[in-house]
Image (cartoon, rainbow, N blue to C red; front, side):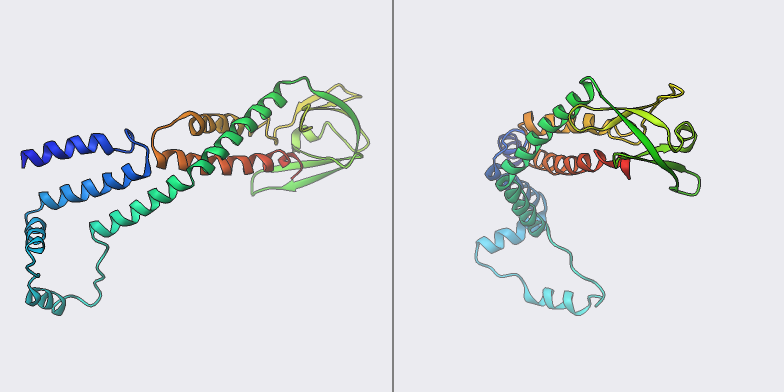
Length: 250
């Protein structure tokens, strides 16, 4: 048994996904684990030896086992079946890994663009408030939505929105690339307020999270499953970013 353990450790180090990222190594690592489990179980080892010798399993035992089995019992997948499914999943991940890495690279570039958009000098435009409409977001949270004569709609909390009445002329500070409103300034009272409901307001964590996950997905080269899942996460973050670029008008 000691020789089996030494051989298992040697093969495990050679084909572990963290050491060898190829799909073939991942499949072999699963088979190595299954073989080691079989050799470590005396009953399974005995059945394996009998199979190699051409001796069939005892049918009476199988019949009695099925005869007295509870009909509500459903046999789950044995280790070989589960290993085979996982091997197929890993092979599929390896096959589509290049696309997952591609999305991670796109997310990395997009996060840099968002950070640059926020860091560049803001643009200023003057608009007139045409209407102020209260919104009941939940039982306790309320907000107000400002409609501007340029067609833009901006959501503020109700306390801040009181400073921007209908007919007020305001200066909007927007980001350079995506024109996301950052600050509103009342021309008459010089009152300034940040726009909280925006990708650069309460949701500014999103570009930072996407930057971290995209860096890992682009430059981390160990583990097929880990990198593939990062690609999926980065796809979702890209889609959320496009939504949050317009969330100030929701």
